[in-house]
Length: 375
Ligand SMILES: *Cc1c(COP(=O)(O)O)cnc(C)c1O
Image (cartoon, rainbow, N blue to C red; front, top):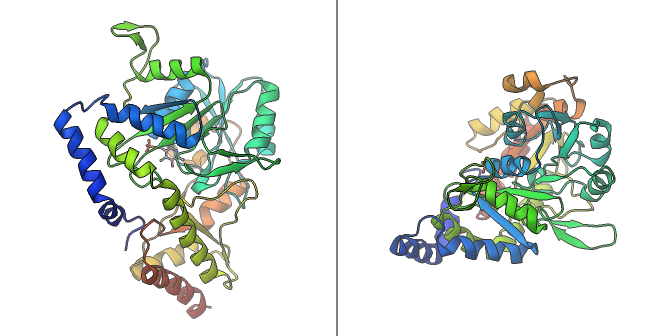
């Protein structure tokens, strides 16, 4: 058993994928081949957004998005402390200051109120992360940011395909809500390619042009460089794979939801286990199925599962502010209670589109045995 079974997923769509990849090998336009534009347009249609700008990976997407905002060294960027390192790394890399904030215990996401408390005159952007497949409370975040004219960059690496539901019932896709949305097509993400890939999304034409320019060595016209940029491209083979997998994304999201609901059912009577909460303002696409072990035995459970051959992961074991590399960026933050608690309580179980019922029963049974036999 694995956390994610990409091999079985490939085998279900092998005919389509092989044909598309072989087609790239034959036309040999490995960079900027027609597949890149086709995928870009297909993703624009799926997300219902005018501009998708493909790039090399999700980390680059975040970096390019920040570069497009023309920040000055020392400007502050608000970011949750409970996230994957990439969200904050690019901030530090650009000589900006990551201002780390706490998250909500139930949703794992930052909230408008936590953001509000961290805003100063130096705040130049807010980067909410839609962690584990569920969208942060974007309506409140956008209202707050809009009043103060602060751009919002969504880190949507984990929630592509999720719908945000506004108070009036209107739905909008994750990654299309902020000033710029960023995503990753790393193989294990919900929409993953067979290597590295990423993209930015935005509504504003001029901003899209700027993002595209930065991603392409700052050149608008070949060999004329208007901006300092980077080299960040999605290659044709990855785009060909993504084009096909995008057609399956909704079905993949449903498959993950079904796995999550079966886990919830299997764990509902275990008192020390807190199953993931679904927020009223977002669908959940379960990039991860993350439990909280509230009786202090998370590490014991992890060891037990590993010994029994059940894959499990701790996303994430260390708050950003306690990471060696981020200590110089802590500022006034040296402890955030919810982040600290989550790092000690969370454990993620296998979830993917190809989960077999008997494998899942084995996972559920093993977790239950841990709590029931060791009581
Ligand atoms: C995966 C991920 C990234 C980075 O994506 P890469 O394509 O690996 O660079 C950024 N943020 C979050 C929350 C992620 O999960």
